[in-house]
Amino acid sequence: MKSLLLLSILAALAVAVLCYESHESMESYEICKRNANTFISPQQRWRAKAHERIRERTKPTYEINREACDDFKLCERYAMVYGYNAAYNRYFPQRRGGK
Image (tube, rainbow, N blue to C red; front, side, top):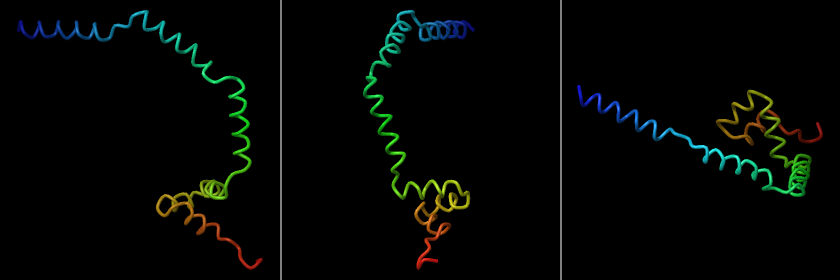
């Protein structure tokens, strides 16, 4: 019984020591949070947004096909097994010969 009481006191003490958060750790968190926004300059941020707009407008054909397949549930299920290229070709066949 004494050993159980001693063990529970030691466990409570260990929890108190390990879970204690000092104010110093919170101060360092605030400093890091403040500096996180200065990591990328406004010019770099603007340039990244411009590149994203350009990439959005000039998508490769496989990306356009994948998005078309994602919108159609049967095509998406087929793509999970056989791949997006096979699924797109199955559900959106290419018209040949001008028909």
